[in-house]
Length: 144
Image (cartoon, rainbow, N blue to C red; front, side, top):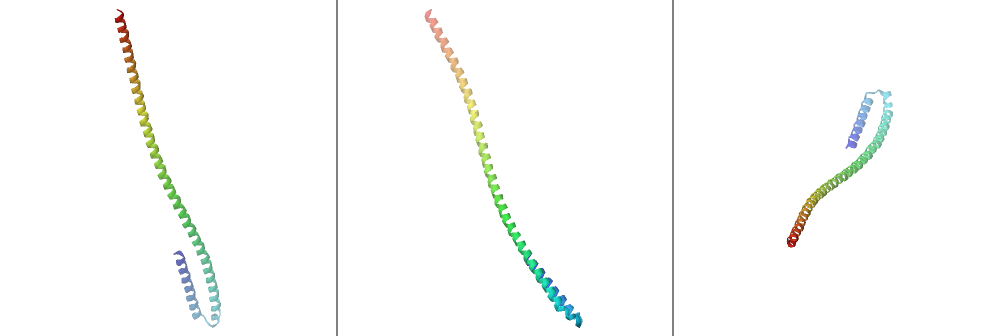
């Protein structure tokens, strides 16, 4: 699009030069008319040089635009990779959180089971002591 606009501007410039030359030739006297073709050739050479430089400039712009499109594509690819990485990271965090919750739950269960075992062991010890006392009591009763 910028290339079309630039070419249009060059065409307008060329037409303006041609119009000015035609006007100069019609206004000029006999002696000056001989200089008009040389002036036109000079202006046409300058126009062609400007057109060549414009072509080089436009090619440079097109190359830069191509590089920019390539960079934009690479940036978009990197952006997608970052989004994928963030998604994976979120999944890992979620799994870590779930694993931590499960571990904490198991730890609480283990503590509960350990307390229960301790309570049962104490009850068993009491029962064993009671049985021992009862046995000793029977033994004494039998001895009497």
